[in-house]
Amino acid sequence: MLGDSLSAAYGIPESAGWVALLGERLKQRKSNYTVVNASISGETTAGGAARIGKALASTQPSIVIVQLGANDGLRGLPVTEMKKNLTAIVQASRREGARVVLVGMQLPPNYGVPYVNQFRAAFADVAREERVTLVPFLLQGLDKRELFQADDLHPTAAAQPILLENVWRKLAAMVLAGPK
Image (cartoon, rainbow, N blue to C red; front, side):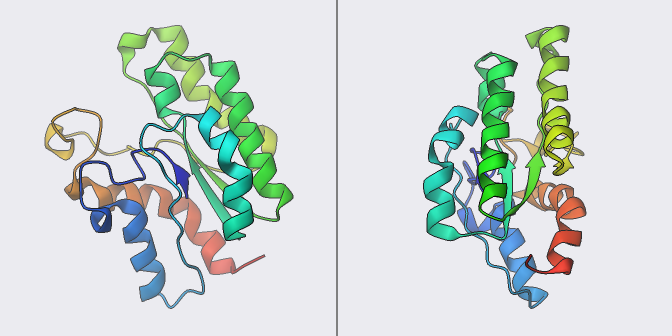
């Protein structure tokens, strides 16, 4: 799992985060997979691209879930750079034999319609161009204010099972198919 604070369980116990819940689900299903959470709060796609090689070398994953881009968007960084970085992460993962799940993100409308639309489309573009699985929007279904912490950005512990289901819908087939 290569992500940012949304996958690093920011503001909640790590054991309550959706990535930890994924690990528990895999154990319950007696899967041969284990979860390594290489998520860092505040991470951008550039940071992820810079450290993907080391992360792949140390873990040798069968599947890489990439959940990056939110911080790029919140900082108003160029969407073209984000796409380039996501593509580099996906390609590095695939070169090492890993299957990839790319997790999309969306921005609030105050960033302007053109930027918001380009940002949202970037994830689908990379997934299509690189032929990898796409989770369209990690926070899909979090439509109640109480599912977010006081910062209005980070989901609460109560929201984490929803995030898990959003990813699981796309990840389950890979897990059930077993390692490549």
